[in-house]
Image (cartoon, rainbow, N blue to C red; front, side, top):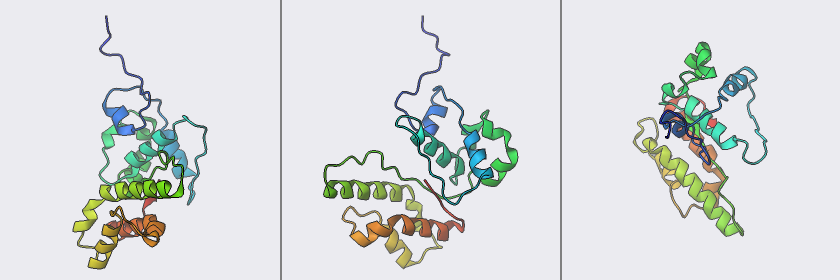
Length: 178
């Protein structure tokens, strides 16, 4: 007989929200958020071996910091006990999240094309910028260039900087880059 209350193992799943909403086991690593906030650094580098949970941790950080986050995802987890930190930081920042994990390529052209596609994907997540009253027509044109598959080298080079500047201008808050 199958135990319907038994949780599933999240083999190959690196999406925090999916793990929390679809009944998978989750080893609570949210205390890392507290540690990052207490030991603040302008840049934090996470170096861990392959299959160590880096992508899941980045997904967790995005879920925590991003404006419009589902705060219920963190119910019962270690970070939820840090009420002051949650009130100050949870759901308060625009987040840019880019993964280079799937960019295995045999040549420069393919690698460049895959990076452009990843930038396009992240820009699409922020399509609300097209309607922003806080961005100028030039800003919106800059944003549109981040969604083009035929992105020129200058645009690609500055894409993350430009996206974060546009988000900061729209929200009036610093951007968290993952």
